[in-house]
Every structure is written in structure tokens, then in C-alpha cells.
Length: 152
Image (cartoon, rainbow, N blue to C red):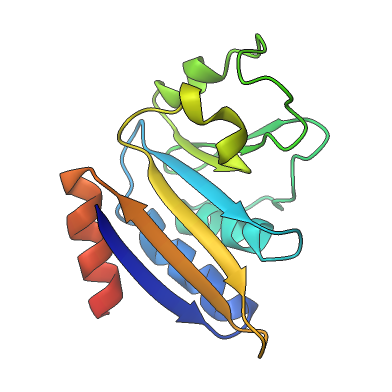
């Protein structure tokens, strides 16, 4: 499994990293995003949306579970924190195997439902306030992307 760690300093750099990642995405890509409350998951989602050409404001779908946006590709921003059983009939698979980009916050809650090719991202707040963003996947496509982003 290829791992890549990037440290961002402030919201602007976190959004820039996410926007750069967006430029590599293809229909059907699923990104699993983990991190404590306040780690920057929604900030990352805003940057990803911007990179996908989405103009409307992006906020956390905590109470709605899924928010849909139209850009260069459909963008499905999910927050599955409140899902107690991954088997709950929510139709998530339709999104995961659809034609858009899925970003799933608290993705470990629904891990059994995620495609094998999912790119896992973990955001950790460091003591100085910087964000440590780790990307990991065993899929060859993501492995080459991780190498490219880490060398940038």
C-alpha cells in the first residue's frame, strides 16, 4: 500500500491541495476522509469542490448525510458520522458506483460498503496547528497519484 504524507499550513494550503487532487479525479472515484472534529475535513471538501468547478458554498452535510453539487463532474459530499449500522438502507452504493466523485467524511463508519479502489485520506491537527494529511491506497492508480502529489 502506497502512503503519502503532506503537511499543510492553514486553510488556504489545505484547499489548494484538495483542488490539485480534484484535477486528477475521474467519474466513480471515491475518497474516504477521516479526522477528528475540527481537523479540516470540510475545508478539504471546499477545496475539492472548488477544484471541480463548483461555485456554490459547500458546508458539512452532518444532518443531511449527503449533499449533491454540480461542477465539471457531479460531487457527492457525505458525512456518515451518524450512521450506526453500515447496512442501513440509504442507497450509498448508488453514489459509490455512480458517475460522480464521492467524498465521504467519517468513512470508517461505512467501510464495508466502500469500493476496493477507494482513496483513504486522514487529516490530523499537529501541535502547531498545521494539518498532516495522509493518503493511502493499494490501488495502482492512486499509488501513482500519491507519489506525484508528494513530490510536488
